[in-house]
Image 1 (tube, one colour):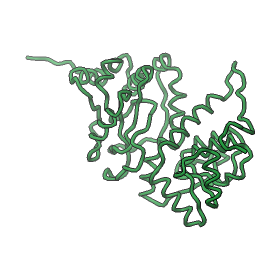
Image 2 (cartoon, one colour; image 1 turned 120 degrees about the vertical axis):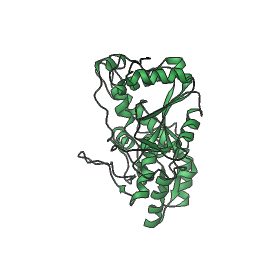
Image 3 (tube, one colour; image 1 turned 135 degrees about the horizontal axis):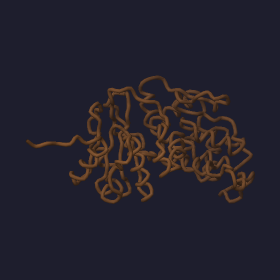
Image 4 (tube, one colour; image 1 turned 180 degrees about the horizontal axis):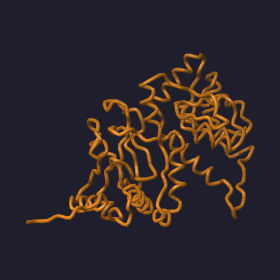
Length: 330
């Protein structure tokens, strides 16, 4: 009588990936993929030879929501999750999941770090929706085992940083705007209050220093900038304007001058003359987020975080009050 050995989860994953000989979808039994989601994940996986894995957007919303207007994919810090599409080519390059880890999440994190060391990307397909019978967990970086931290000591910091900003929330903001009224914040909270339930941050006061700029960049909301003519620090204005989804001006003359001075995309600079016009702009920002601005914002936030003083390192120089290299700066 034939006998079989019961494999653990990690060993079962590895066996399936190596025997299959092609891209593999690892999915929990309680996950339901929306119509066309698997095809979208496969297209994202093969959109670049640098993509190692793809996860769907796990959402409690209806699976039929049309997400064609949001950025197609977003980089994520790890390949963990209850639904994961893995590239067979990458498995051949770096191997499977390490069975030395007892927890599946840690094995996925380790695999993701090995892929990133090869210059590969881990992405989420924002237009591929999936739902689970289990309640969605709030974003958090769980405790890791000693083995994972010994191999990848920088991983918790990287994972925490990836939870910040609006890039990874673009699809969530879009879905939220379809389920209820749009929520707009007018300032970054000063005493630990959360912006988690807002979709837009309307910054109508000048940014005074790099620390305030970083707080804006790390907020979970889309950024809309106003009062550009009130800025004294041109470097801060340049950085904030290129990070914003939209910049509001009062006249066509102001708009033209701002586009020329800061080399802005004309499509991001809007003349708004009424409250209703501003409301329409907020909806446009959430419904059609600009991927270029989101990517610039994420990269700038990473750069500013790297300038923070660390023990044994010299203090980073502050942003200059006057940057003469900005085209059109007068």
